[in-house]
Every structure is written in structure tokens, then in C-alpha cells.
Image (tube, rainbow, N blue to C red; front, top):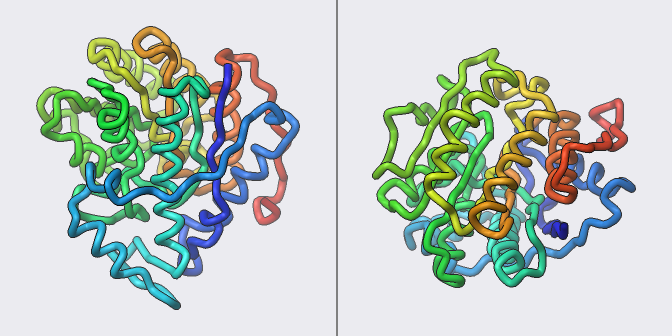
Length: 324
């Protein structure tokens, strides 16, 4: 099984204000875990810049131009109280988009069975016309539309297990029956969307969880709501919005998931992809704000993508978060 890893140093140049949870150390933590011996067979590629024409399939022209116009030459510019741009942000966001579309190319050209895009900023809160929640462009939604444009993928699914609901992906897919969005997330929690009543045109499947819910409730929500709906949809590509802030260590949520839960759901989504679309899976990094929880969860997620089984070796972890 071939897995590609897309990264780029630009992720380290997206600077956020002091104390901001979406910080450079997140990518350092992921890079460290994926540099261990366990991932020696992981093929690595540098993310290209995302193209305007790909972004504009998911976002309004005015949104793209506003993000570009707000890019500062020094200091910070705020698109909302949580979403700040530094001089390096625009390139980082464009590389995150470029990674997602390059990953689609790779799986449709049979260069790899699946791919993981380890870049920041995240994207699933970015709506058609609005940046928010640390997100500028919605790389999962951009990748989904790109697959349809470039490879005639009739039906594309995004499954999101971030602790926060992906309001942006839901917004972009809302009226498109050939785009599937399935999400488990804590509710109530930012951004306030994600109820079971939000169904789009029968293509949106929300399975909200309550604060304190853990493995049992998460796996039940996936098994009873998201995975059956995904099978009924029959995707030509499965995209994962891989947020790891549902981990029990994470400071921004109150779910109690473990690394093994992320491995379990990754394997279930791979099984669905094997049945419906030749195993094609593209995973993009979303949230995850405790460095140890993020690193361990991303590591086991990538091991699942690489091996396709549950025989995991826990990569070595730093004990001191400050050293990650």
C-alpha cells in the first residue's frame, strides 16, 4: 500500500499571535512524529501552490480577493477575531490547497492509494464567502470539486471527525447532491452549527456528540450514521478532514477520544473507499491543539493509511510538550 505525505516549509511561516492555539508548533509536532523510523517507507512530496481556478470552484471570487488583499507585509491582519494573517499566511494557505489537489492527482493517477496532507492552516471552517475559525480556504472542499473537474468524479465524500463542526464544508456542499458531508463533532461548541436537522439536499449527515463522550459514543455515531450513509452514497473519492482535537488531551474540546479511535475510523473509511472507489483516500490535517495528542494521533492515522491494518507500533514521543 502506497501512501504519500505532502508537506511544505511554508506551514512554518504562517505566524499567529502569542497564545494562539493554531501555532507553528503544531506542524513541528507532526513533522517530528513522521520523521521517526516507523515512517521510513513514507513517500514525501512538497506541496505546490494552489491555483486560483481550483479555489474558485469552492469559494467566491470576492473571498479569494479579500484574503489576498488582507495579506500584510508586517504584523497581523485579522479577518475575524480568531483568524489572523501574517506575511507568511497567504503562501501557507495556498500550499495547503495545492497539497490537497496534488493528492487528488496522485490517487487518481494511481501514483499512490492514499495521501496525507500535513500542512496548516486548517480549512473546514472556511465558507464560500468567509474565512473564520483559523481557516482561510477550505482545502477539503476545493479538493472535492477539483476531483470532479479534473477526473470526472461524479460523487465525492468528505468525512470530518474534528471536534468542531465543519460549517464551511457544509456551506459549500449544501445544495449539491453529488457532494457528501458527514461529521462527528461536539455540540454545543464553536461554530454552533452541525445539528441533525441540517441535511442540505439529503447529502449532509451530522452526528453530534456531547461533552464527555468518548470511544463508545464516537464509534456508534460513525457506525450508525456516517458510515451507512457513505456506503449508500457510493463515493468515487473519500476525503478525510482529519482533525485530532477530539483527543482527550485537547484544550479546545471536551470529547475523550484516544489515538486508537482515530486509527479505527481511518480503517473504516479505508474499507469504504476500497469497496466504492479503489481505495482512493485523501486526508487533510484540520485541528488538534495539544501537541502530544496531535502528534500521536497523526502518527497512528498515517500508520493506518500506510498499513491498512490495526497492527500499530506507537512512535516514540517526547515527554515534554515544549520540546516538540
